[in-house]
Every structure is written in C-alpha cells, then in structure tokens.
Image (tube, rainbow, N blue to C red; front, side, top):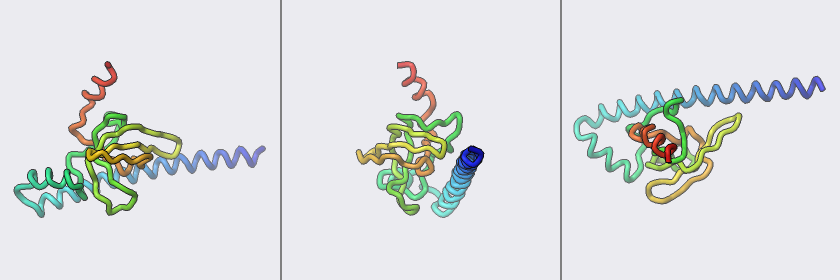
Length: 145
C-alpha cells in the first residue's frame, strides 16, 4: 500500500513537472516567434503588409498577428488561429479555426479546421497560435446565444 501511494505521488509530481515544462516551452516558443518576426521585418523592410497577405494564403513560417494563450486568450471552439500543419517542426502555419478542445493532466490538444477545408484532430496546443484579431468579444457573443 505504501509503495502504491508513493508511486501515485511520483506520477502526480511528474505530471506537474510536465505541465510546467510545457508552459515554459510555450513561453520560449513565443519569444522565439517574436524574435523571428522582428528579424523578418528588418530583412524585408518596407512593403511587408503585401507580402504577409500572400504568405497567409500559401502558409507561412512565421505567422503574424498572433498572441500567446493565457487566461484572457483561451483556446476555445470558434477561436481563429494559425495552426502548424502536420507533425514536423519545419511545416508551414496556416489560418484555421478551433473546432474542439481537449485537456487532461498532461496537456491540451485541439481539433482545427483550416481555411482551405482541411481538418486535423488532436493537434498539440503548442502547434496552434491564437490570432490577436480573434477578440474575446466574438466569444462573448457566442456565449450569449
């Protein structure tokens, strides 16, 4: 009985460390994305807006206009986002909408529907970035209906 209780405590502690590590990873990825965006803007100079719109349609390596997930920016169904297609780190990011969200002790995943109609299931939250123009006002309107 004592060994079982000890093993349960160890699992609980390991899950907590995994959650903390995932949060740290998300924050680091956010800082990296911001640094890449700043670097790309410096390289591109003027005319960035026109190129940005083209990139969005065909996918982009550095999605613009995104914000980190937080208590005020929640991953909820209907939320507009960029999602990184596939499973490889070098895949492109495309505009999408969150369809369903799944959470457990270890992490968070979501089903997304890309603007071109493709869908992916159980996408890790680290491969989804909220669009800042997907305001909480839209979420409040949906809740009122």
